[in-house]
Length: 247
Length: 243
Image (cartoon, rainbow over all chains, first blue to last red):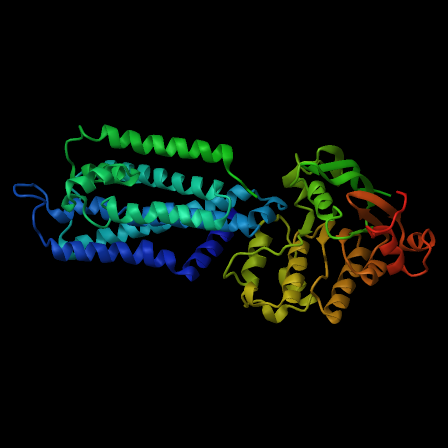
């Protein structure tokens, strides 16, 4: 526990010094919240909808940090620590290099949760946001999406041969998902062909799940997204466990 | 005398290249063994196999009577390692790296004292990346001593150090040796080996060409200076029999 705490504190500090995550996981979601809030001020999601466009977008915006941490942060830090032989140095201590992995996952979970709280408070204070669905099912969906996105990141970071390739794959996953999955640009205003493309991305499915949960909608359409999230998480974790490279 | 490190008949190949070809060695408690040889002679592979981070093809290894592969957690509570390549997180400070390293062990040494001993006391709040090559090298020796080890592995101990810093490192290690520390080191510097090592092993293409004391190495060679004798044992151009 002493090791975990010291490592977590130090690695978190290092991450703050890097600034990227503060920008992409903490500032960006709040900015998007404000923009969507101002653009669609109090308007219903569609004519006759029982919820506002903003309320509909909440579930999407709170995945921005998950996406940044899971698909960008984790692969980069893991491949870098392997490339820099930091994991190798852990192998000649009483501590398992896996602990460093746990610490990194914890850090990105902290960023995600901090972002969720900030986005929620921004919505509540400035745009009268209220979670219509049950808090519990929302949080359940939220952590499932986190698990699924993080497992993608661990897979990429764990098996990419070097940090350059990991960075390229991470960019290839992160930017399309950030823009086209509905996390920033609302899915509902995309033209249908773009929506079809978006549906292919796991994060789009995760966002559908979160929207349904946050709006408290009837949940007959969520089986597919739920299964996609679950399968992604299980498959990526299994492949990582089998092929993760410490060195 | 009690045995600290024991290796018998170690073999390791990478594809068709035999990196280590039948090395056996014993290091007693409080003894300093120097592993010498040209680049690519198999020194680092030997150390990595002994440490259990590489799987040997064949051979038996024990450190402090434990299997480094199976009893990792227990062994590395009492074994310090300085690798040839220096590895640290970007943007980490000296004190942070020391704190993290200390947190790995049940009963770590005071890192501030060690930093002081190695002339780094004023660098605690510096970024590791901003240290000079020699300062980094000394910092990583400090890290290897944080567990209060019974055994340390030092791979290319003083590469990159200026003469004064090398003397400082030698003095500290000699003091620790007097307190019973066992050291396995690799080095390219003959003067260093003469000062520090009780015994040496010279490798050439993964095989042992000499194993014994420095004075034996000289007397069994046609030379009367250790550096010449070393080159005679290690030089790839020369033909000589395995001893």
